[in-house]
Length: 306
Image 1 (cartoon, rainbow, N blue to C red):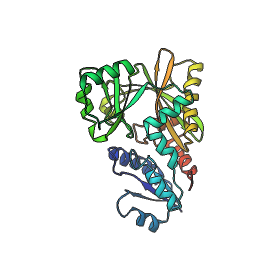
Image 2: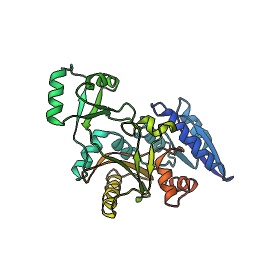
Image 3: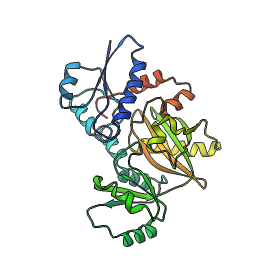
Image 4: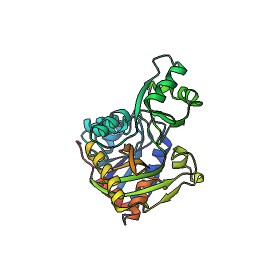
C-alpha cells in the first residue's frame, strides 16, 4: 500500500485551482487499490497531520505563494519526507519573476524588457509615464512579482496604467515589462526532457485567469504547434535550458510569446495545473502519456532533498 499525502488548497489566490487540481489527480490515483490517499490543506495542524499519516510521498499540488515558492518545500525537507516537483531554491527562483528574468537574460534566453516598481515612492503620473515610455515603451504589462495563474496581470496603455497600478498596491513591489504581441506558445518539460508544446488562442486579450480556468472563455488549444521543425526545436530547447538553469525537477511549463520570428520567455512554472483544462496533461496525452501515467512519473521523481 502506497501512502500518498496530497497537499492542496493553501493561502494563495490560486487556492480554488489547487483544490481542482487535487480533485482531478485524486480521481485517477484512487483507481489503483494499492494507493492510500488523503488530501490535506497546509493549516495550523499540517505538520501534526503529516507525522501521523507517515506518507511514502507528498504530492505537492499547491499553487502560488507558500506552495510553489520554496516555503512548503523547506518544511517538507525539515520533516525528511519525499515530495514532488522542484525543491526550495528552484521554486523560490522560478516564482520570483525578477530573479528568474535575470537568470534568463544572463544565459541568453530572450525575455521582455522589464523594471521592478516599488509603491514605497509617491507616484508622479507624468514622470512615471515618461520614464516607462523611454525605458520600455507602451503597451506594457504589470504583474505581481511572485504570483501565478496570471492573477492580477494587466495589459496597460498610457490611459489606464495608473488605475491598474493601484490595483496591485497591496503587493508592495511589482514587475513592469514590455508587452509582446504575437502567438502564445507553452512548452512542458518532464524528467529533464521535452514533453511537448501547445499554442493557445484565447478569445480574451491574453491567456489570463479566466481564459485558463473558465470553460466559457473558449480558448482554442492547438497541438501540434504549427511552426517549422527549426522553430519548434528553438522554443523547446529554450524551455529545457530554463528548466535546467533553475535546477527544476519533475514537471515544468514555460510560457512564451512568438513575435517576428523570436521567442520571448515570460516565465517558468514549477507546479503547473493538472485540472481538466490544464495544458501539461493535454500535452502529455497528445504524446501518448495518459493522465494516470503522467501523475505516476511525477510521483516517481519525488525525493527528500532537491
